[in-house]
Length: 88
Image (tube, rainbow, N blue to C red):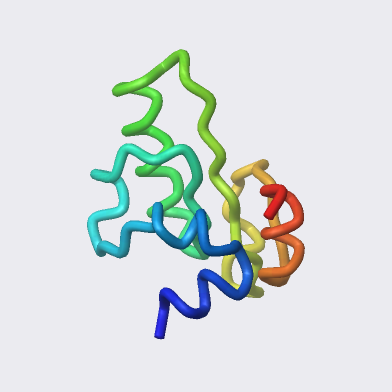
């Protein structure tokens, strides 16, 4: 199940703060880990409008199909590297 998986990589404390939704751009979170560059861009645009002074952390989960998206954001190839980058 998803919660167990999140606990494995990101710890119990963070697993209590995860929101699962298809409408990711509507969630006012600090971090979005996403493989869809279009969804990541939409989320970041919404965050900049709603909270322009707050720090946002968009992270691209790397796959061959999202290499040439034009986004220059952190890109990781596995969950261990993402967890480490987030200090988990």
